[in-house]
Image (cartoon, rainbow, N blue to C red; front, top):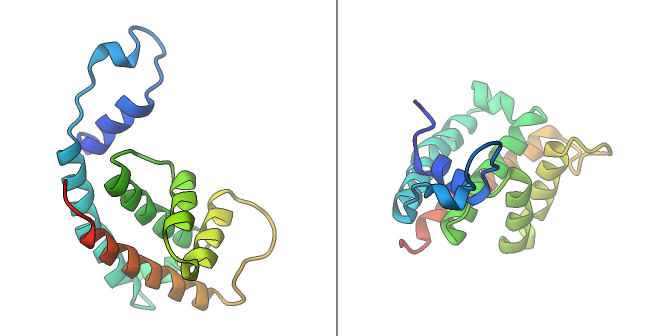
Length: 156
């Protein structure tokens, strides 16, 4: 059961929608803020650090995926969700995480965050990048920046 982890339970407690039965607040959904932070930190340190390492190889599957429209949104918004959770102890959608990233990270990152939000939302219009390789480079640089920043956030 892959979905038995703190993110699932925090998401249910935070945003669960009752279809039938008692309201979420009456159920007493288990949450553990320390477990959530530990789980998210592990995900940053393993999954996303590995994603960056392999994605940095131009002809790897992940490196090539970063040249598609799906790769940048997956990476930029995915790692931003984790940073959001580490700083707020809440779970955000990818769209909300992109808005958060634009607010908390320097303007250096606005272009890749805006591009990732455009791709995620499937908005029309031109890319903010003339070349997919330049976009790929910014995704990798953003991943590196957020991974390092997340590692410096206070625990607890």
